[in-house]
Image 1 (cartoon, helix red, strand yellow):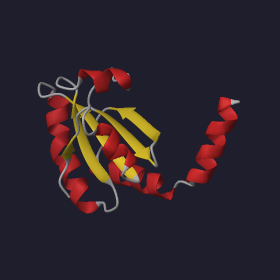
Image 2 (tube, helix red, strand yellow; image 1 turned 135 degrees about the vertical axis):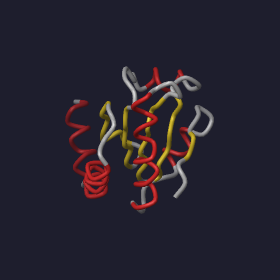
Image 3 (cartoon, one colour; image 1 turned 135 degrees about the horizontal axis):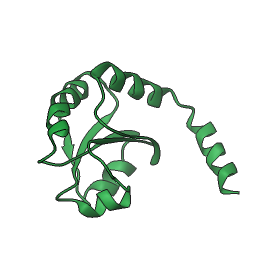
Length: 120
């Protein structure tokens, strides 16, 4: 599957219309981002049921600020419109696959219940 380029114009639709979305916050000048890009592309071809997207923090500073991105690359996973994972730094392919499988296996009913408890 191709990796989507997200902007503020298509961000909400992408998050709202897909069950699981993984975001790679990156910048064109970032060496570690460039090194991680082939791994991200490779895993996007292997893992089914997940939308892979990239956000250029230089072009989309508003999105970077919204999610308080302080270092890049930063990976973030949304499941059912809820941010369930965020981690700065590149990941090895096997680690990325493991995190995505765990995201798929989450009981989102329990996640929502925990969020409600925290809100009270």
